[in-house]
Length: 388
Image (cartoon, rainbow, N blue to C red; front, side, top):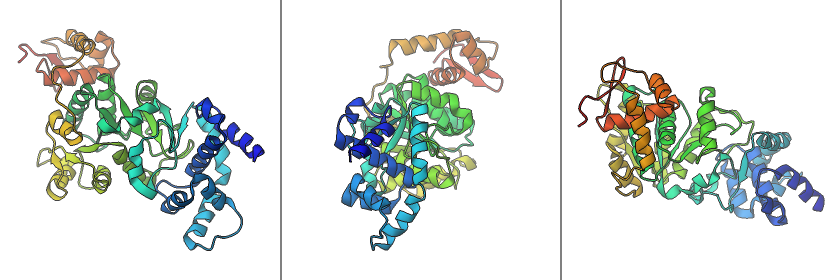
């Protein structure tokens, strides 16, 4: 047993708090949970039931022993799980290389909300960034939607993410292009906390074009999280399973823009199955990009979301209009000063003049537009002549 503990400590070194490595039982528990995340696909109910019955450590002993158990489902599972045993060391090594952290059930930063998934809950979570962000489930709101977002969808997303961040909500999304990316960027620009839930390992930026965005989330007061270990590629199945985790980590889910067959409807389905409040933003009746939202409103009793107030009601958020901090006001002033009344300017030009990253400038421009202090045209942004 002592030799096992030494090996397990070696695997966990750098991935868990030092205090964990000093407690033999904690070492065994963290190691077993991490190994289970390597051996199984997300949502493996057979593994979940076995762990629920026996605990992660004893269940892992059953998984790796030679003799069959006599339980057909467990024995079939053992064949699946043992085939992945050779990947375990590589997963731990990759996690160390990107300075990821491991949290397991019972850890101080473990989000208890995911336990609502029952036997399909994750065995462990791999994170980059501030894992404390996962504990803000009481004010966590998922903003999700189509990758092929329209200007309307991105505008509404920026509005919701910005205003809700100022109210203290954390924004949960999937790190994808379109609505997800805008939700994360606007939250960061507003100085808020955002959680990006990935379908692959946290060492793999997906999509690759969001490597910088995911890096900013991990480097700020937010977190990038996955239930699959480092080195795992995102697949269609893992995206669908990832969606259940987005729903579980959030107090409520809002679908901002989605086509009739959008994957965002899968997230909405998980939210409904968990009994979490569900909202949808209406769009033009002529827009195929909003057909999925209209379907949620018509067939699934989703709440109609037209403002941050509507969204805050879903998770019990309070009205805090006008409570924006002075530093954010100064940021808006800097962007406003970079605008001209006569000459349209691109967000990139505004960002350069104001000293912000382009995505930060876009989030602040969206706020100024809501305040009628800036207006967007086909050629770019202008300062409004007479703010209303």
